[in-house]
Length: 128
Image (cartoon, rainbow, N blue to C red; front, side, top):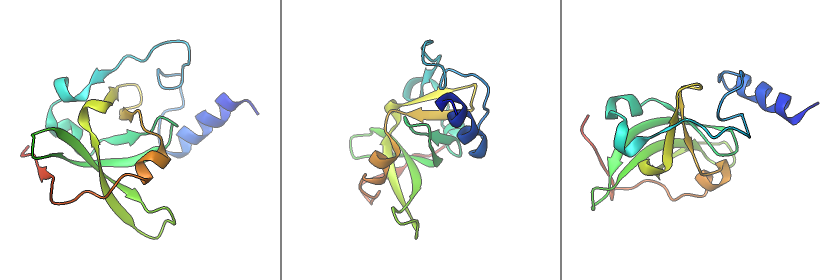
């Protein structure tokens, strides 16, 4: 089976559209909007997050800030053994919105998200 077909099947199983899209197309650059500058906060929380290796990482729980007011998306990821969950943060500036799949795309792969340290009290919620 063609790898493109496997990817489309995987996206369907994740609940993502399987039609040709900027995320799937290797020849066309994706049309995306940087999150940190152009997206309203209320549209970020609850949105799906897809990794660079095309896996559904989860949903963005909320936007948080550090002591320097840098913005991050806090997401819940499964533990490596699948026995629980933990929250990690990803810089908001590293996420791009892809309208055709109605999700944010991160440049990180799933294993990189799994290896991130757990979110802690150094981050505070950003009011909506």
